Length: 189
Ligand SMILES: Cc1cc2nc3c(=O)[nH]c(=O)nc-3n(C[C@H](O)[C@H](O)[C@H](O)COP(=O)(O)O)c2cc1C
Image 1 (cartoon, protein in one colour):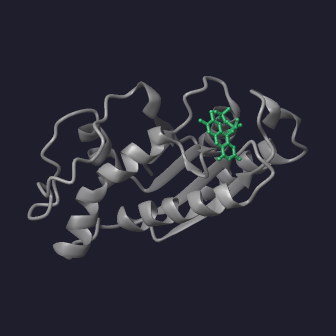
Image 2 (tube, rainbow, N blue to C red; image 1 turned 90 degrees about the vertical axis):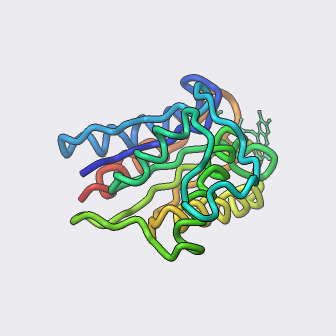
């Protein structure tokens, strides 16, 4: 089973990374490895809406997204972990998501979905927001749902935490780390 994860936070060892680490630990219980894409460290051009993918389903730009396209196509499980920035996923996450317009064209214009392997395709969404407001989570969830459906991941679980702002504050949450660990375990069961 191939498992990939996108880390959308720029803050090293921040709340999102800590949660993702626990989810990965849960996955690795099953003797699986998780390939992590640290989006903040990658060279990914924002979608130019050039129409270059409309007839082929392939992006015409060759940057770090090329390896992500390949990884998404071959993945059985996809984890997206992002902080809430301005009521949505982070820019790092969103740039990657927008470049999945190539998959959108493949799926909705060319009518080809990414084939499922024997394990099916499932997702996990991890969100952390500093404010005590649900609106950021709601908007991010809508964006993430569009992402998962576009890359032919028909179902995903969401773990979202609000009111977690300081670096490392997630560690003081009574259940978040354990829930992330369990969600990782469940994802590959
Ligand atoms: C640019 C920026 C925008 C933010 N916007 C929001 C927001 O709209 N809603 C919210 O709940 N928190 C917001 N926050 C707070 C972060 O979501 C919060 O600090 C979170 O714990 C960061 O996770 P990290 O440690 O993984 O980076 C924002 C933080 C930054 C830096």
